Length: 106
Image (cartoon, rainbow, N blue to C red; front, top):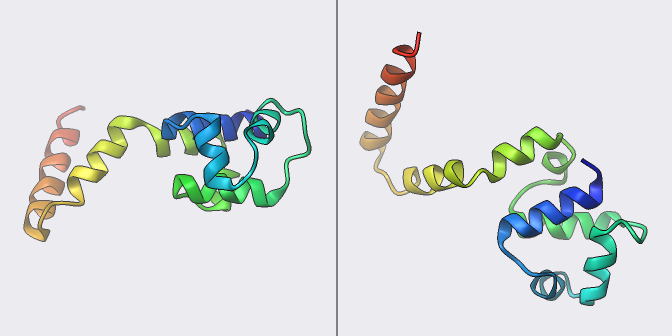
């Protein structure tokens, strides 16, 4: 996927309209549209703005398409959100459970 496509994917995954993304990045909506449609030069500060909004680093952005797919899979994000509310003992128990069910796949 090209850079413009990745930026659009990030915005869509965040559930933001081009107007909302424009407000976050403090640019015009038309700038977002031109950027995502690859109709303008994409400056690094624009990429950094998208990354900041998405909670990823610029390095993660350039890691490849598979990284973004994993990073933004809703079910993975939901799982991470749920786990973040667990106690340390619950995390340990969950880890053991995951090991148990993944070992039974073979």
